[in-house]
Image 1 (cartoon, rainbow, N blue to C red):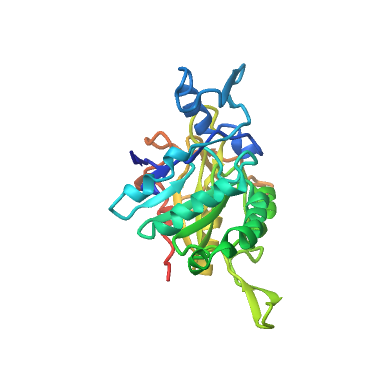
Image 2 (cartoon, rainbow, N blue to C red):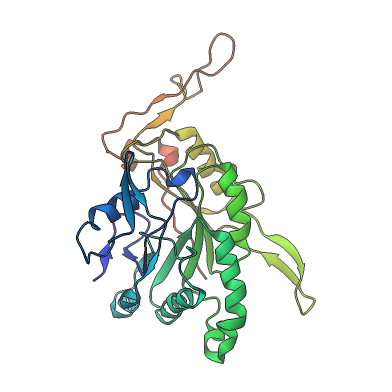
Length: 312
């Protein structure tokens, strides 16, 4: 059965893989860990054995489990949907074999009425899989080649800070996709997207000696952290990202400001207030009624941006 999602940028979630492992600071307060632990306590339950309980709460056990009986779920959905793939895992976890990933891509390729949104924190494995697929999967028969890369599959990476962005975005852009996107959530620090990630890049001639260009990011999702232990998100970090996307003509979707959004003190004209010595004052909490800071009506007007990319 389809799981209607409360995630604002998608319609439903589809989980042919369950379970994960932490890889960076963005995983510290993972909501999926808590959900998996809650639904994994009874013998035979879907997430049994995929989490452990420590002194700091539920944690992934580090394993991922392929769920073949979930593969055909999108084939039974008649109405077109935006589908977030593996909200409870990472398709490119090392426990998922190349052949199993190929099965997921086959379902997506033949489910053309849907748009599939894949997010990963493992772009190096994703790139290796595409290199494997070009030899073992796409070239195995002529028919899949017509659908490669699947025009309804969007590939994205999650990045919580500048370091993660520098490591993950270049690898993402080397993978074939109809849309390349990033989810900057939880946003834990400022991220500068001007590092040529929003523009086409020449990469040299292809095998036919034709110029080849690496496509830019087409979509940027940004959001502050929510849930227990949520870390602060400075809305000026969000503002910079929105501005850079607007200047580059890249679709931007502000999902939420987070449970502990902060902002630099400003005067009545909107200018940042500084100390007598010219230094900025520490940011102050931004009060919102919405628990996750997810009500755009409570945001500054310039942050009320929820766009989707146009796909040819």
